[in-house]
Length: 94
Image (cartoon, rainbow, N blue to C red; front, side, top):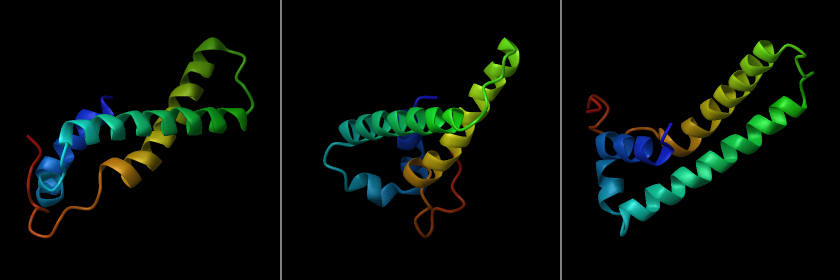
């Protein structure tokens, strides 16, 4: 997932005033995307470190995927998909 693009699209749709107030939206979303990517990778690695490693290669792949999805769920809700501004709740993503 391109976290910078996902955040920019979400903010343009659901947080238009906040997005309009940014001095450098491209730079802001690029930095946000990089930060979220790093946080997701770190948390996924922590999750995997606390689980018994699956010996089967396919099972291990699923285990890695589940850890990444869990980390994404946490950080995307906190950093990217913020609560809509009043009046934009019914907007639809392009």
